Image (cartoon, rainbow, N blue to C red):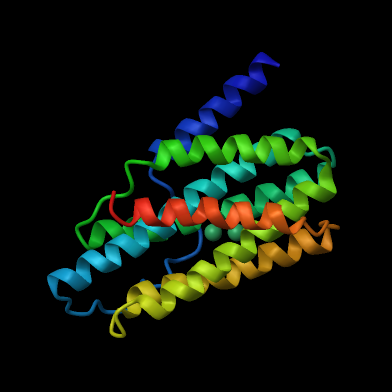
Length: 206
Ligand SMILES: [Fe+2]
Ligand SMILES: [Fe+2]
């Protein structure tokens, strides 16, 4: 029990403070950067900071869900998806730094909230846990789609990153669905939407 707690705590520290590494090449690796005005640059940093924080939240959710998930198959599936989210973290973090920006100061706060939500979802049983995961991935996919429309048209590097992330999130949603995700009640979906709206509004700035 204590060993498990130490392991989980170590994971939290890694997720928040270690430089994430991507096994796959970064999707924007072979793309030249565009020329941006100061306001375009700030806008891209704001958008990418939101996507980075979304991935921090994904880490918290996956970690929380893996702690309380009952079925071992689910645990492995979660661990695989969580690995891809680490790659997303690496891609967005590098893009933010490349543009001279910083990741959000609020990351630890949103991580803690997501971890608590993941643990709670896991306690309700696997089909609800998976339902929560499927809905999260769908909402993230929606955000990515929206951000693809908001990027300056000549920001091909950020676009390549978001497009690959979107493809991965769609895969994660399907995975949750295939493992037997339950359809969440509409008020829960709405509450999740509100929480992510709060995150995007604040993290764009700080
Ligand atoms: Fe992701
Ligand atoms: Fe995902």
